[in-house]
Amino acid sequence: MKDKPTDNCPICSTQEEKITEQIIPLLQLKKFPKGALIFEQEYSSSGLYLIRKGSVKIFKLSPAGKEMLIEILGPQKTFGEAGLLGQDKNTETAMSAEESEVFFIPKSELQNVLNKNPQLYQSVVQALIRWMDKLHMVIENISLSSARDRVWTYLCRLQQEQNRPIIQLGGKKHEVALMLGLRPETFSRTLAELEAEGLIKMNHKQIQFIDATEKHNL
Image 1 (tube, rainbow, N blue to C red):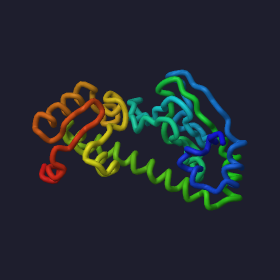
Image 2: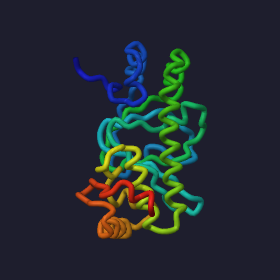
Image 3: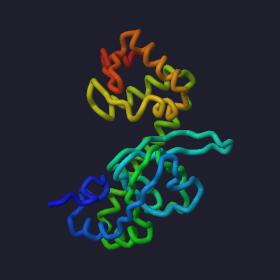
Image 4: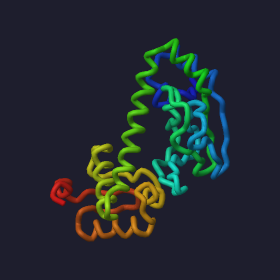
C-alpha cells in the first residue's frame, strides 16, 4: 500500500486511521524556492505545515531587526502548531532554507477535525511543548556570556536529547552557529578548542564525548 502523506507526521501518525482519513483531503501541497517566506512574524497564523521535501528555517526578529535562528526543520517535521491552540499571530518567521515542498492544512479546517476528535489535541500540545523547550534552549544559550559556555551547553543538551555518547549536530555548522548567536568561525574554533582539551572528538557533524562525566566538572 502506498504511503500516506500523514504517515510520517509527528502529530498525525499516531492517530487512528479514521482521523488521518479526515486530514488527508485537507492537505495542500505548496512549493517554495530557496529563501521564500512561508509565514511572517506578527502576521495572522494560518494553519499547520508538514515538510515533505527540503528544509525550513524558523527564526525570530528582534525590534532592531536582528535575526535569532531557532531551528532548521527537515522532512517529516511540522510547524505552526501554536495557531491551532488559539494563537492569533505568528511569533516567528518561517522561510525555506532550500527549495522545499510543504503540506499545508488551513487552520479553520484542521480545527474542525480537532473539535470532532479531541484526542488529537494531545499530539498538538506535545508538539508545542517540544517547540517551547527548543525556544527556551535558544534564549538560554544566547544569554550565556562566552562562546565556550554556549557551545558546551548546546552539546550537553544534545547528548541528553539523543541519549548516546556520539551525537549528531542539529543542522549544518553555520546554522547551529547562528542559533547560538555566534559567527560560524567562532563556533568552529570553539569546537576545535574543546577537542584539543580532550573533551570531545569531532567527525564532521558527529561529536563524541570522550568522558561524559567531564561536563559535570566544568
